[in-house]
Image (cartoon, rainbow, N blue to C red; front, side, top):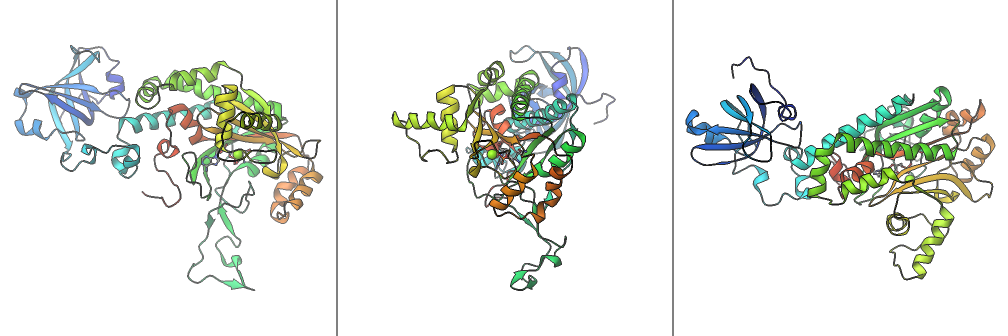
Length: 467
Ligand code: 4AD
Ligand code: MG
């Protein structure tokens, strides 16, 4: 198309005053109308909203109009005029239309009846072009930006921790190994794999958390955060687990558990507020299509203080619930880890607001958590949210060299591989704390989606790594 008019994004066109020549580009959502006039809804991904193109059929080749179908891509030059229809303030009276790419209506998968979220996951090109995914990608982007903004305003340093690592920070052992060894011909020495022949000369994996490296950053520049992909080979086929997810891990020198809880609460409230302030069109769409209570729920968490409860007290509440007839799939008693049904009972039924659980039995938490005086519990914290359960896990860290080393030994972990970490306790140790926010868990909450696979563009789960 030969024109001196510059293309304007649809988001901006919809806010513009009528009366000027414009150029819009995008994909056709729908085409309707009659012999004389066609109404084309055009979307370019800049907003959930479409701009309406009005095409007087007498101005165009019949064949061109015929080739404009759902999914095809166009450039449209014309006049921005006040819209007569309701729904939008302006529309484009088309003068010239160019088709970039046709979209065969017989073969385009969106025409199929089955446009369930599950079906969409199998059609990568189309999935991201749906209204739902457009909304999710824009909210996801806004949240990523807000996370950097929040920490930047507080003077935290964005630290890049390695994705390939030797250390299993959480001690759960569910890591993806990274190797260049020929798996059909693995070098063996004394009956064991000889990792000295491997690329790094040792056994390495994808990281499950940047925390341990983060602690080195925090005990150097004071306050850091990481924000990157995280990998867990847990065989958890649930609506809340991914094998590859993104995590934000702030780590702060001189913070105790109280400071840690305060920061976590301020952080998530800031993010929810940011979404309400900047993503309202998308949130309204998601609210109407998937989760009627979404916007209400987002507003409600901002206005209230999260409930702070010890693990022991939470167990008492759950045991009382069981005694009064509430049924859980998994048993609960002191010493067990909570399942999401328990977390959701506390948040949704008992307290009716987000809950921060603290002081867990040491045996269900990682080695690095600060031990309490009672010898039984550690200063961990989990932030639990409605509909999701845990979205944040964190703790004050064990700052005492002796206690940390003893705990590592008790758990049968290798001290040798952790010397670089233990050194922080050897040389100028300080009280410090941190936590990890699961980015996709946050997005579940902010978008109201029910399945974590639907808040990440290319989900990885057991037996699924397509595209
Ligand atoms: O509770 P987690 O395992 O804590 C840590 O990794 C600590 N090193 C964090 C820290 O203190 N710096 O994980 C933190 C959060 C969870 O609360 C959850 O939101 C998310 O990460 N998460 C997952 N999200 C999606 N899929 C999975 N498989 C997840 N595992 C954890
Ligand atoms: Mg956790």
